[in-house]
Image 1 (cartoon, helix red, strand yellow):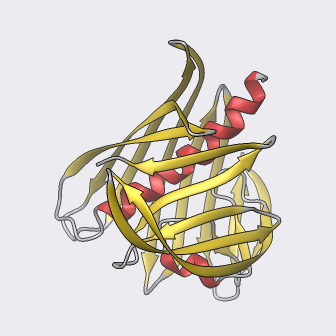
Image 2: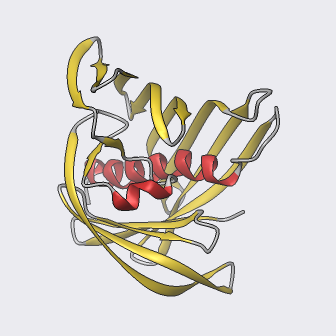
Image 3: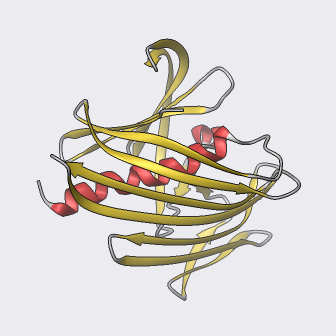
Length: 217
């Protein structure tokens, strides 16, 4: 397995980590919280996530920081860091400022919503994003009804379809009823939301390997 393969695995996991942090503290007051999660590859734990979320006085998310590493036999293989600042209003993204360090490759993203579209840049280059595109923020339950998404790291568009089913999964050795959403098309993934519509698990395939990210706390 190449370093690039591991990088891709961690990348999706780190995006999830940031989004899980939002779900875990949606009703928070002004404070900072630390959260932890795990990455599993083919059923074996292979990495960890540490993310910090900071809230303002109104309880809205101000800063999101994510750190992660993936290791085999104790040898660190890959680093990923992502800082996101998202502002939402009535379920619609208004602005996004993001900086992602993908093992040394930097992505600086800026998104601001206008009436019919987004004004966006990636590394200071303009990017066209239509107003009906939804950010690929898996923490947000509305993602399950969206046919057009854009990636939070590099802003590329993804046309998708979503199927839903009921499934009980085990979280911390407790049977948890969930809604499962299988996304196909330009992005392929599975999302599990609990009865409170909070994301609890995320899975996808990389080079025929199953990657699973799960919130531990």
